[in-house]
Image (cartoon, rainbow, N blue to C red; front, side):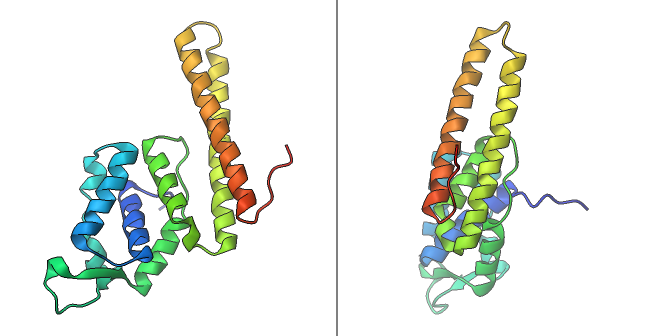
Length: 186
């Protein structure tokens, strides 16, 4: 079966939770609260994303309690070696083309935990994101050209989307320069 290695919504939640645990141990309630907070502020409430059971992280051995002698609600979870490997796999995965709320969430999570990757992999992720937004820009420009005559409101909205995408490209190009890559010559 073909798989394009792009993150699915449940994997975005998993990436966020594992990234949070990689930065410091948390109890289950705090982890769930931080995941809901981050997702809610980026894409709004989403049953598809919020319903993802974080308990699976423990069942799958991606995190474990630091002190199993404490009551379940008091136990701080920490990421396991297997969890670190899964975090790395998720951080290195693709983002689906056509930029939408879910892909923006995934990009934000990747940027939040980009520092957890080795420099070469950070550079590769930034290059991949640059390519994503370059394709998005081309798609929007093509759509804009198709609507040059007529619906001026649509043309104006597309101009706004094109400007925002160009700004994202400039930001990622600057990021590439900051993490050791070479900025564009243009």
